[in-house]
Image: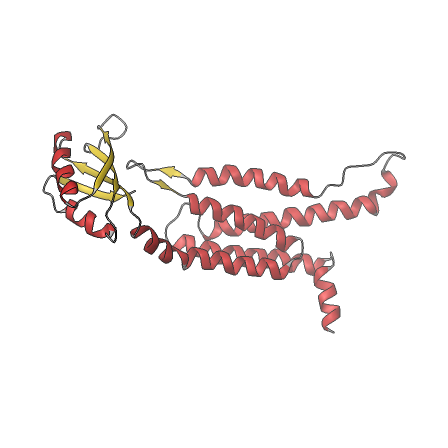
Amino acid sequence: MLHELYKTLHDFNVISGTLRLILALLCGGIIGYERGKKQRPAGTRTYMMVCLGAALSILLAFSFDQMLKTVWHGFIIPGTRPNTDVSRFGAKVINGIGFLGAGTIIVTSSQKIKGITTAAGLFATACMGFAIGAGYYLPALLGCFLMWLTMTQFNFVEKIITSRTKNMNIYVEINDLSDIAAVAKVIRNEDITIYDIETKKPNEIHKNNPAAIFTLRLPKNTHHAIITSKIASIDKVLMIEEV
């Protein structure tokens, strides 16, 4: 009985095709739900559609390949060899994901890049859709679990690691560019090395306050939160953000 079920699910038929599309929808929704909760550019429905579309493209590729070998075989001109490379469908989907992923990546006014994880998630979700469409259920489910684990749990681990690194970039908004000296003095009093200071003046596009991006080298065992809190306590500092 189990052998019959296994064969049915792995063969190319209506039942297995329907199951694969439903599974792609569910797995894409699981990954997208986490992104949606954090108000990312691509949410639950986007991930569901990407995974579903990828799975559908593989199913279509298998269908065309099967049709060329059976129903359409009699229409093939003798002596010719039609191109039945099913991987071309997946290649076109990946190209489309590249454009979709690039649209989720933005650079904020503080020169902080956002959306890279969302773009990577869309790419991985499409690959997961390929695996589901091809009938590789176990690798696809394992991949879904690992993607969910990476997006939900490793974010906490990443924050711990980055908060203890010696290098640090901070974006500081101030009343006037002349206030940079006061900020730099506080930083140097903490025995911190300033590698670079990049100033930003208001313009027609970014009409916010003058700002500066400090590239710092912290002493050993110095937590990033301590540094940002001390700089934030300066009266002339309007806003501070680690980038």
